Length: 86
Image (cartoon, rainbow, N blue to C red; front, side, top):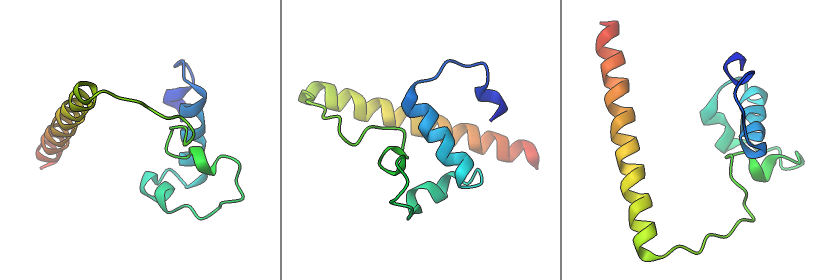
C-alpha cells in the first residue's frame, strides 16, 4: 500500500485497494469474497456495478484490442521477470 500514498486515485480505485488489504494482499481472493454485508462488496473489482456503458461496435472493438494488447504486454513482462530469476 505504500506505493498508493502519493498517487492520486479515484474513489473506486481506493475501494479496490481497501479490498486488497482486507483480503491480505491476495488479489485473487477478492473475486471469491463472500462478505456481502460489506458496503464495498459491489465495488470490489474497482468498477461501479451501476454504471452502464453504451458502446458503439467500433469502440467495443477498440477496447477489446487494447485489452488484448495489455494482456500480451503483461505476459511478456512476467515471462521476462521469470527468466531473470533463473
